[in-house]
Image 1 (cartoon, rainbow, N blue to C red):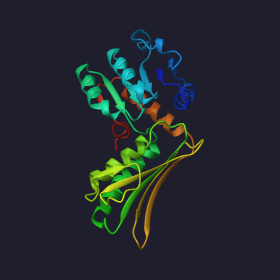
Image 2 (tube, rainbow, N blue to C red; image 1 turned 180 degrees about the vertical axis):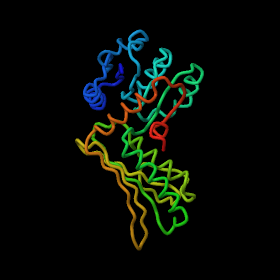
Image 3 (cartoon, rainbow, N blue to C red; image 1 turned 120 degrees about the vertical axis):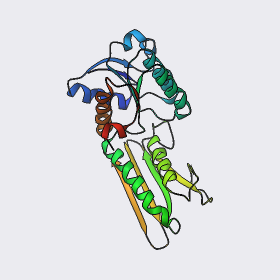
Image 4 (tube, rainbow, N blue to C red; image 1 turned 180 degrees about the horizontal axis):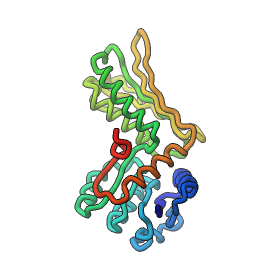
Length: 239
């Protein structure tokens, strides 16, 4: 598999390391210093593009991949305000894109567990209240994380009490709080807590390193080659 890495920070380098170990080839590496190298001709050297840049550059990167007819796996978050526009363009151009807030197998299983627990707890909220806590490294640009937003949106879809989420603790009982913490050199921890005056239920996922995210991104990249449409990790993992 020939890969174009769009974003060559910590995540891009983790993907490259694992890709080379799996005998794949990285034919294009784009960072802030060589954006002029991101052309349709250069993209066409690749079988797949993997996008892990920034919310400010991701949209233009994805559009160029669609024009080049190169499937693109997207791990960048905080660009959702443009997602409907990009999805419409993907359908119009008969392209292929796969969007995930998190590519880790463990996190995607955690998503399923969160949905199931939210369904179970719906009948018991109140007396139980809910909050989400997320911890990431200090260099993370978005807060809350895309993973935390996905967890929150799944709870909102299952729980009739909460009407929205906010990135702080609110006195409004219908607002689901997401509490964000930034600590140096932490790959990521997410927890969902249900608590009452009597007890507490908590589920948590802790990443030890970036290998799980890189492995999932490469799995998604191999899976989408040859396909057309808009996909997620639920499609890849048949969840």
